[in-house]
Image (cartoon, rainbow, N blue to C red; front, top):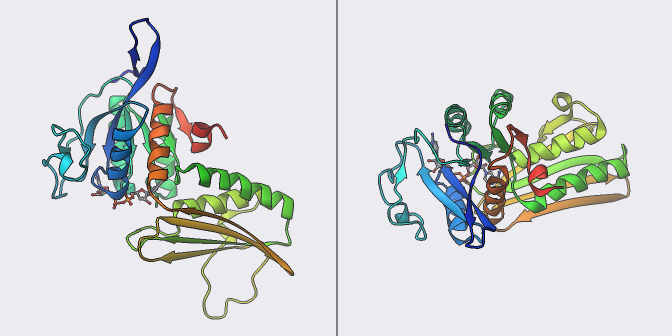
Length: 286
Ligand code: NAD
């Protein structure tokens, strides 16, 4: 089993100048996996890519990773087999699918690696399983790793508290045509933020779209609307409206780099931490 302490780069004078974060990328051939590996190669912080993993059926398995990511070291191959042991301080970064995330949890428990989980579309049973694993190893779990969205959560909670009950809340998200899950993990989190700030109940309060004759909206419900199309990286708006005025808080991601840099920052932060379930709020110190 790997130790938690990451490896430090020590200068000749004995001063620690940097700490290397070993990472294992789960979903390395995907949109986010490729972006994270590219950002790791160009980052000021040192990351060591221990393995780049994807599903066994992926056509690139066994091929040099450099065919997908030009900055990858020529010796690194896209692999499907999980390493049996890993260097101290290793962090598994997961941007895959819920089933794959569950399989990864068994592996991090066995190896003692930490994890950064960005996969969305997870159900309660999956989230409960992540919490169980986090009793044994440190895990950062966040449906959105961008600084801006994590600030948006805070602004939304503040808006709920300041505006109060007469404001109707609707959440609108838009993503690229390839996105599989809906609503986005971020939209679900935004709804939770509103519910927590109101002290309400999630199961009765969320209205996923409207059609036919749904009747007048109730003041307690939260409308949730998902738009899919083109190459939109991720837009989220929370609209607060009442008779006579509307306040809208919007975040728009224009590149996946913002999530990738957040995931790498989370990996450097969680490497060597105590077991526990952490969020980007912990990583960013918000
Ligand atoms: P993608 O489909 O491009 O990539 C997913 C990759 O996972 C694919 O290469 C696929 O082959 C691989 N995969 C599937 N099963 C696997 C397995 N068992 N083992 C290893 N690899 C496996 O998707 P994407 O756009 O990269 O997004 C991935 C996930 O990350 C989605 O759930 C998405 O919503 C989420 N996401 C989260 C954030 C965030 O900030 N948290 C940001 C963007 C996307």
